[in-house]
Image (tube, rainbow over all chains, first blue to last red; front, top):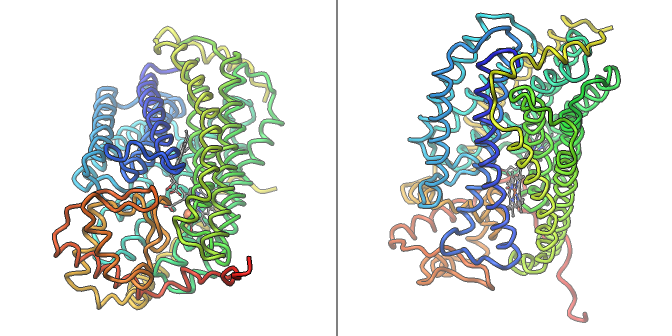
Length: 452
Length: 146
Ligand code: HEM
Ligand code: HEM
Ligand SMILES: [Fe+2]
């Protein structure tokens, strides 16, 4: 760590970990409900559980992004954060709005619009909070040294905020509502969030491999270029069957089928840089998580996205558990793992404790990744069975749902392995203790490892 | 070899170009395509009320409509023609909450006006043109011999 103000990242990471645990608990509630044990129905009906599960996911990932930006931007621009008191204010207001939103879901204070359930009055607070966050980041960035990595990261954050706005307008026609909902959801995860992901990955690769910044940043441009060239028109894969004109079948089909290329490029980029690098950085755990992000995002988003993105396939899989299969591995590989990577990288530097390569850390890595892949397989089995029974053979929904219950037993077993991994990760997280100014010099020690 | 500057032009140029195309197509979809496919002019006050309740109650947190939502309860895009008005009315007014083979729906205290709104909304939805979704099952029903 070079600057005292980078320590603010810790609070965001801590919040992210707490919300992540809560998210998982709601996952189990739904897993059991799907298996036939909807025992909490009277207190937490399924729609409350699903909304809480998804929004906690989004909020903890955003907390992770914010923490990452607070850690990375001072380092990249070569100076302290513009204002630490404002950053603290931003943290607490973010945390409070998040907690109020989640609590509200339990008393029916929500808007039933998948992923955007946060009610409008709170939306304004979210928007205000994010503006404050962006001001702090931009002021820091503009005052200091400007690198491609920090610009890509910041542009991702700015556009993510802008794209939230169309999701706040009310429409009487649900198809129009849905049209703009995808401007948020799709253009986030398959657009601007990939910019954030590219920026954070590039930063991690520069630090961990020692490869020349110019080389890494050149490929960063190529990766994010591919993202937008395919991903913007790729939005069409959500417009096939939701009221849009039929030309989206063709346009959405072609361009969304190209989206995996961006993820593939990200994978090749990370692996190549690792191979070119000097492999001397002691933080093996951070390197594992960085590479797994690049690889698993390709599997979950790229390959499993491709599996159901062509209109002929999507006609049958649209709105089934096949979608949930893809949603889990994509979010895990691309965004959850990314946050765990930057946490693994930055915690030793913020706290001065060198937990780089310990047993628990590796166990956490393997349990969570294998657990999530197994969960994906369980969702896949349930989803494919659902498609054949309900959509192809024509059995009704509940007949199908009862038939596929056993797959949710498998899901719960896999989820237990996954959760074990996450708990171990969090144990390690607490082992680091709190960040301290005494850690200010730690980065220097690794700087010397650079070969190029 | 590609230089960093060329890579940057590739990124900026590609993004701007495809963003413009996307915005153009979106304007067309919003002005022409969606209103036509969804009979926008037939959205009356009852349908609007139904849509509002659909959102307030977060029905999408269990069901899908146009294939969007959660996967805990049936797809409702074509429920109006599948089940008919009487059945839907019974579901929405079940005193203990609709329960169907072990899976329970939340218990609601809708007024008759609200129920009528939801039914109008589902009836409107039933007539939307969604490029062939939901598809008819491609297999014939199992023969009685088995
Ligand atoms: C990191 C990137 C990605 C994430 C986090 C992600 C996540 C998700 C999620 C959560 C959904 C469900 C959305 C909903 O129904 O509300 C979804 C749907 C979908 N995704 Fe992705 N996705 C990613 C990338 C991709 C890519 C690259 C492709 C295509 C190659 C793709 C294809 C699809 C398709 C076709 C659907 C619609 C499924 C349906 O019709 O029900 N996704 N994605
Ligand atoms: C113990 C772990 C977990 C379990 C048991 C679990 C289970 C579930 C279940 C049953 C659903 C609802 C499917 C439906 O609508 O019927 C769901 C939705 C979802 N979960 Fe999880 N989940 C877990 C962890 C996670 C994690 C770690 C992530 C992200 C990294 C995640 C992301 C999502 C997303 C994006 C959806 C919405 C998917 C869609 O509607 O297409 N879940 N989860
Ligand atoms: Fe998408």
